[in-house]
Length: 62
Image (cartoon, rainbow, N blue to C red; front, side, top):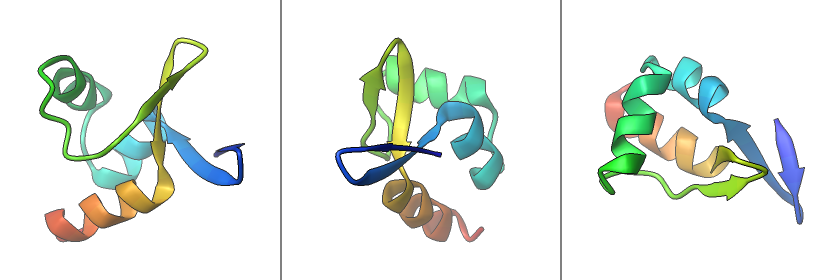
């Protein structure tokens, strides 16, 4: 977990693990502008707010 300006973020690998998805699925969602979660790019890495990952996990029933 990475904290930036008081907000906790997960890397794509961490988010994928928590969601039961592959890193490739998250990458495809980002590249096709259809990600159900907001994210930031920091130092060349996609970072997802933990609150977004938790929300999406609930939608997926996980």
